Each structure stands twice: as structure tokens, then as C-alpha cells.
Amino acid sequence: MGFHICKSLWTAAALALAAAASAATNKPVLVHYMPWYVAKPHSGSWGWHWTMNHYNPDTTNGLGQRQIASWYYPLIGPYDSADPVVIEYHILLMKLAGIDGVVADWYGQDNYLDYGLINQRTLLLRDYSRRAGLKFVLCYEDRTVQAKINGGYITTNDAIANAQQTMLYAQTNYFNSPNYLQFSNRPVLLNFGPIYFKNNSQWVSIFSVLAATNQPAFFTEDIRLPVGVGAYNWPPMYLSQQNGGTLSTNQLQSYLNNFQNSATQWPAFISSAFPRFKDIYQQAGLGFTYGTLEDYNGQTFRSTLTRALTNHSDMIQLVTWNDFGEGTVIEPTAEFGYRDLGVLQDFRRQYLDASFSSNTNDLTLPLRLYNLRRQYSANTIVRAELDRTFTNLVSGNLPAARMQLSGLEARQPVIYNLALTNNTLRFVVGGYVSPNGAEIQTTSNLASAWTTASTLTVGTNAIQFTSPISPQSPPAFFKVRTTQP
Image (tube, rainbow, N blue to C red; front, side):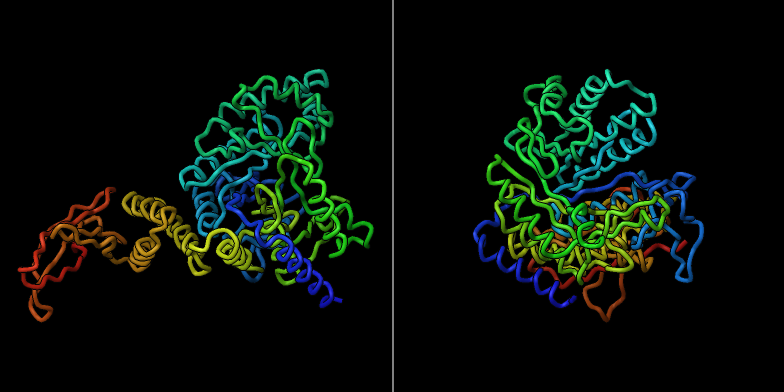
């Protein structure tokens, strides 16, 4: 049975490739991101998305893994979405995996339930994505409107006005950001649903308060509203109930085909790719499950990603980076490692950018930086060097970043960014440099004694060294040595 399913997935992927081999364009690859996690080590308590009022992350198993509300375990353990070290790690992984932008699952700005906290985490995600050169998009959850009505925060009569204020906040704090994704000179806005505002006229009224230049390129789930430019697809788990709780390959392919057929009538559409779906809601005692879409050893992701890359969609949405409760996770985990990000790298090279050079080994660099951030959180000199490492990673200077990380891990100084221009030798001293300083030593013969060429004062700025070199000069060798106390 398993063989036939996997074979069907491969067949579907091959057909999609054959039918649309020329359709691959430079469309952006976006990843749907959940900024709602709260972790005790950072915030002092465990949030619902790790516990679901059932699991206790303070309890660990024999592997040292905390008990969390998920079948899968993040490689760095359960984390807090307000932790800059975590967001930096995620953003760097996205950059090296070939992702162009982040779609933040957004509950608005109101200080009701955890919506305000999620918004603060979303702002942090926006800032780090900008620093890394990634695009940013909001996916507005209008289901929050009914929750606010149920809780007495607003009334039904206030619903439109409340949503208008939410859009005005988005305009000021997100749409106007330099890295916010535009489509046809309009800010891209996704909606998960719609759930509460189901009528097109309601959305026309909601958007009416926005500036003419900020009327959004609006995408809803599955079905386009007239006010929108298109829609995006999502794992159709409602179909799994027709098949004993498991979404079959045929059901999935039929859904994807129907969505694409509908999308031919729209100005634009977003095609989603996903690795699996396996929620933990039933096990957490919530009384329901949406069912299961099997991983099939990575073939679900490969198949849906191939389709998204080779059809005529305008954007690709990866579902999701980190929805651990539903298992649609491409973030590195204990179970799958870097597998899905490695697939994404390979497919980006094949379909979008033959010059894309990052490989699976490069994906370990953000984790090394993450661990060093934790180790040296109180060391301002090392923190500054790690900031420079971040810059090298996002700019593509991976050789320098590797040297920096290796030096810090070994607690040794290193030389990187070596260059010879106009008879002047230049390099940067980095890695781990003692607070007592360092010195550059030189010799003209490796068998001779080394002499001091320069004494370096250590601070948070990069240590630069230059020396004149001419063709007529004798050979010159240089090394860096940490000054002993």
C-alpha cells in the first residue's frame, strides 16, 4: 500500500513537471511562520502552544527532550518567539535554504488574549527579516474578531470598525516597511479564511480606510473574493474524514488540480507546498483531530513543491515553518534534521536559480551561531563578532563566517577576508580574541623568529590590519597571537 502511494506522488510530480516545464520563473518562495510560542527560559512560563494545557515541558525524557504538544521536536528545543537569538537562527536558516520571505500568522494588535504578545513577536520577526534581506507578509486571522466578541472585548456592531483599526495599524507598522512584499505595487495580504468576514462588501469597507497606495493585493484561502486578486491553497484536511482520518494521495491531487483550475480565472494565485499534516489535538485532550497527511519519506513535500515550482502561480508558500501542533514543520527537528530545507535548496537550484550555491552543510552554520550566542550572551566583544558573523552569513560570505565560528568555538583568533590591493595587504582578525588584546606577528622566513608587527586593542569593532607589500620586498608571513594576561 505504501509503495503505491509513494509511486502516485512521484507520478503526479512527473506529470506536473512535464506539463509545465517552462513555467518556472523567479517567483518568490515564502514560508508561513507561527510567532506565537512562549517558553519558560525566556518569558518565565510555558505558553499554550507548547503545553495545550496537557503537556509539561518541565518534564524531560531520557534524551533530555522536554515534553511538548507535538509529535516532532525542534532541533533547538522548545523556544520563545520573542527571543532574538531564536529569530536570528530561524531567519538565517531561511536565507541559506533559499527562502525569499516570511508570511507571519497575525492576530492583530489588540491587547486581548495573547494577540498583543503575538504582535510584538511579529514585529521582531519583521525586523530580523529586513536585516537579512528577506521579504515580509502578514496573514491576518479574522477569526479573532469572533473571539473578541465572545469575550466582550468588542460588540458585533464594532466588528468592522475594529478590523479597520487593525488594517490602519498594519499600514503604519507593516505595509510601509521597506521589505514588505509588493505585488503589482500593492502590499500582499493573506487571510486565513475568511472566517468571520465572509462577505466581499465587508472587506471593501475594511480596506476603505487605507491609503490608495496601500490597497492590498488580497489572497484568501482556496476561494478568491472579488476584492482580492486571488487565493492560496492549504492542506485540505477536511477531506480526510472521508477516508478514515487519513488524507489519501488521490484526494490531495484532486484538490490541488481543482484549485489550479479555478486559479486560471484569477489575476494571481499562490501555490502551497507542505511536508505532512499530523496534529496532536486529540492526544492533548482537545477532543478533535483534523486527520493525517503522511510524510511518505519526504515525497509529500517533494511532490507539492514540484507542483508549486512548475505551475503558473505567482508565489510559493511553504506550509509551514513551525506549526508544531499540526506537524506541518520544515524547521529542523530531531526527527527529520535538515532534510526538507535540503530539498528546498536543491529544487531552488533546479527550477529558480542555477547559481544558488548554499548546500545542506551550510545549514549547520546558524545552529553553531545560535549555540555561541547562548554561550557568550554576557561577552560584549564576542557578541560583536557574532553580529559580524550574521552579516557575513546573510551577505553570502560563508567562508569568513565559517572561520569566525571555528575560531570562537576553539577559543582561538583567526584571520579572514584576506585581500591584496594596490600593494597593500589587508585582513580582519576575528574569532576569539582575548580581552587582553592580540598582536600580529611577522617573519620573512618560517625558520626564523617571529617579530611583532602590530599590537591590537580589542573592542567591539572589527580588528583591521594592513601592511604594504611590494613585488621587490622579501617574502612576508603573518600570524595572529592572543596577548597573554
